[in-house]
Image (tube, rainbow, N blue to C red; front, side):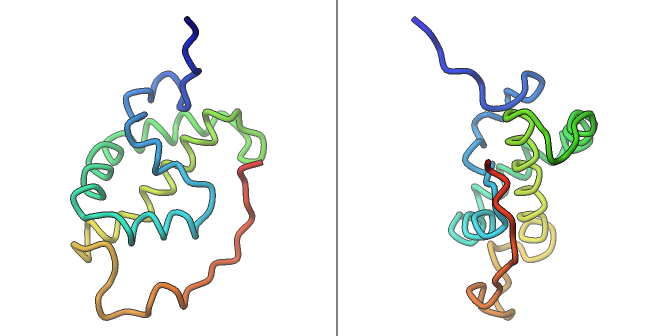
Length: 114
């Protein structure tokens, strides 16, 4: 019986449970944040935040435009951490209640999933 290969590099396989946060675009990451309950956002933040330095050190060995797929997913995971950081550290909710409607913010982005 064969098993699918891991989607994150070996040193970070314990973060596989949060693989649904490994999203290629800012729009996807924003949508995930605003549609997730604060408890899920906090659990993701609490799992990944202590590992951020190790993630950065690991990713630093690759050119950003030529990463192996598992490292690319780890990069996307860390970008999602940046997306949720303000929600956890400042807002204490998925989005700012007295700010612009999130649909008004349209990022210019390049899809890096290919």
